[in-house]
Image 1 (cartoon, rainbow, N blue to C red):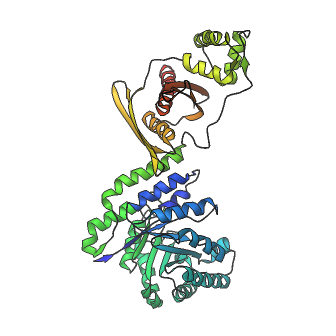
Image 2: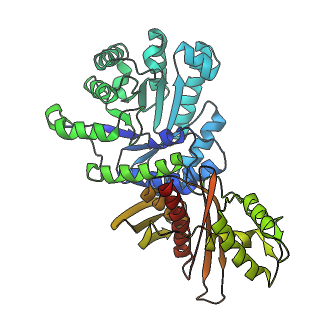
Image 3: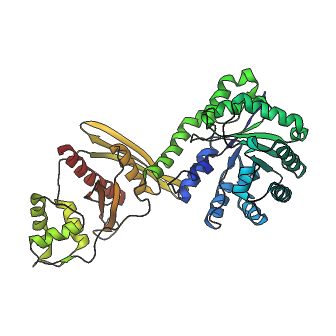
Length: 471
């Protein structure tokens, strides 16, 4: 029974998702999830921000212990040094040299002619081997490369110390049988490949990536690159499932933890979906409050209505009357600021029958773990639950409420403040959500500020639900 090594490429795949920007904690949490799957290697994305990314990669390298860490090195010795510094403390470090070998990619990516690319690749492969005993030479776009040039490059990579050679079908247009024949021909013409681990990276352009990967294995490949989530590479769950069902018949196995696969896949999906949908605190809370607004007892109803409109509220005559009554009571003591006016609107305007009623919540948070929130609410006599991870307990709580409501609302403003003093002080939370072109505010008060924030969010959400129901 031969073991097929699995390299997980989920982190680079997540980094490439358009419109997403993962926090330090989120990327570290994804890496921890992948570590619990026990792939043989975990690929890291390239360093973009030399300081912040290097710190993250070093943290991941020292945190992940059940698998090796593969780090891309770029095209210069300086980039190779930075990559090695980031990954050198890993339990099993690997440097990954990704060299485009087709004419089109050499011109587009490297802006070099084939001879210059070959010289650069030879120098970098030898240099990486001097830094790290495990070097992965990735032959980019190998299936569209000039056959003679490709074979020369592979011989050079083995000669210069590469321990793994990865053949990349970057276009993803080969059928399984064609890829198997391509690899068989290479192994026949370049016998040096028998002295290294042969790997394959497929692209799912034809929706046959897993079949291509298994055909490559039948042709002599012993390492496959896959992703836990995403559809542009072989699916790790699908490959593990194939090997579980047919591995004994084919004589292959892998060491991936299939028992935890589904749970960890859901956990990573939560993190990614939160960034794609837009987390409540994505980009920071917009402070929509106009601090230049100050009202006194001498201001009339029209001035009050204009101030509310400047803050984004379209108050009905009934709500305006309630706001004015509360405003007069407050203005009799002192002038009312914009934030105080918003607190009044949140407290007395649009008071509606509750669609959602909080039943309870559990928050898990700490410096060494990603915050999660499990919230239970009642709606129409049914109990609904939301479970989400977030960048902090309040972010996780708001994401869990979005999961329950089934809709993402833009968080226009969020404020917290102490109402009383002392260890048992009451905290007040203010939430302003935007639904379409309208703003809805809610407030909550509790000795637990997270409890207050959840109540404030539900208060605003109930107003949105009521408005949508009567329209």
